[in-house]
Length: 268
Image 1: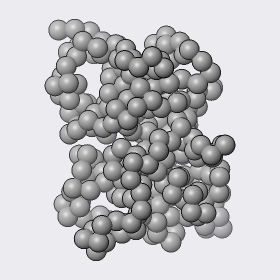
Image 2: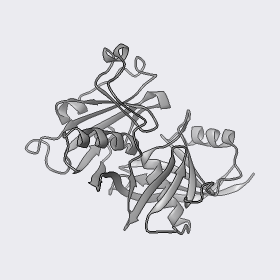
Image 3: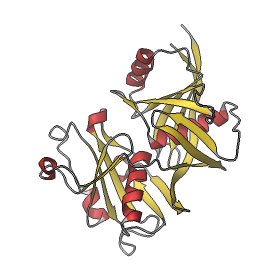
Image 4: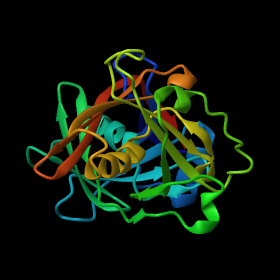
């Protein structure tokens, strides 16, 4: 049995235990894929990550990301939580921007005063959904790894009122967004987001960086959102997620607060 540094990070909320948790195993190079998958199934969080030595010379560290059911090439809140854990464990970036290596490739990450942001990876797929899916959901793909089917509704109220048939949509990952009404909803955010990730073994994810990254590229690119906005997510789960989106020099950054809530030793 080997011992590993372990942290559980709350991401995308300034309020403790009201964001999205990610479990991070540090120095996990000695673990097999099967051990990582079993550990992620055991934590039963939406994602568990494993920090490894990089294989690409440009990278500061490498991460593998697992849901309870499968491995992902990229995911947003695990990227921010993993970067936070890597720095907390003594990681030293080579430059002003931290470079993460993951299944999708290299992802730049910025860190400042407890806030973290990643540069949104290019969409692997975009455009209209296949006709046979239109009657089940609708509207557009924003795929940067997990394969999100993204839908925009008319209001925050409509988004919060959704009651999905999880069994009927069990093979899909569906993201839904709708605008806040500043008069009725306030001005803390401009969009409400919900993420239904049944295909990854998670009915509803509390706060989802990869989905928000894909949505931002779609919404800003089509003129439906400003270059800088805040998305609220996790409301129906009792969370207070806030995702900050900024378009700078043609690149979209997705970020929020990350805080360590659990720290200790994992024995595998």
